[in-house]
Image (cartoon, rainbow, N blue to C red; front, side, top):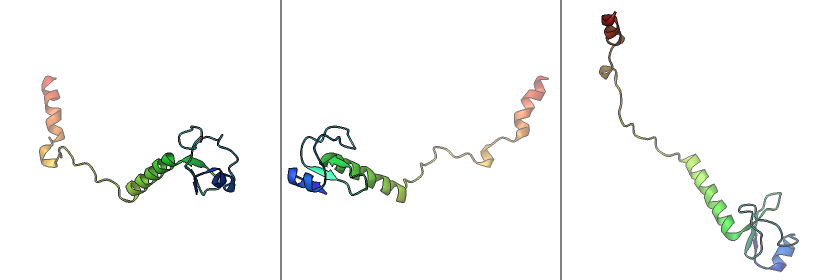
Length: 95
């Protein structure tokens, strides 16, 4: 709910502007304010509500469309690896 003045604030059941914003923890000293529709009746500055909505949209987007995996810098294939015997031979020669 958009709160633009004292009348809107009183109709929304908000007693005073002494509460703090749930997002930035600053005093709700000026209008416009946004009242959330959840059970705890959180009140936000309009800019804080927009920032929170943006964060939620970004989280939802990345959840439903995760970023592509990183391209590997190098790929090690079986033909490029040394056999286990090759790694043991230098140690046997030292003995």
